[in-house]
Length: 126
Image (cartoon, rainbow, N blue to C red; front, side, top):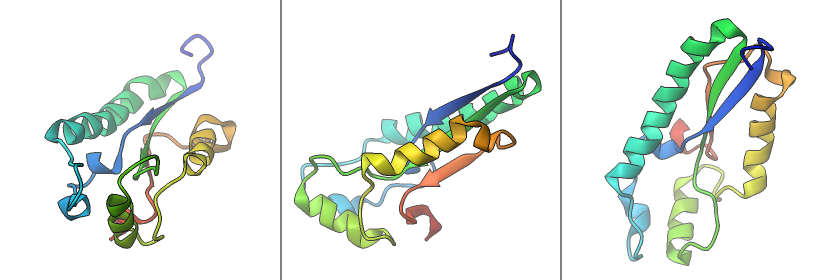
């Protein structure tokens, strides 16, 4: 990327790297949220900002996508509690993340860099 003086780095974090967890959504489930998760995901957000200042002068963009919860095979009680907490009233599907990643990686965002883009159904807007 440095040789071509262009490129895009898209890091993936989590909304729990930007805000503290809502432990009430884990009630009555075997699930929880470990402190190491916030440490890792918050670090990725900070690393993305750091990287942007390092490689931007070489024509390389660095952004961080911050998704909310993605529905897979979680406990139904967790999914229901999560959906009640999110303004869009649902968890993300994998396809909800693809478009923002493609945007950040494409020339459609060629003047976008250093961005932390939340894709969380409005969770962090509250």
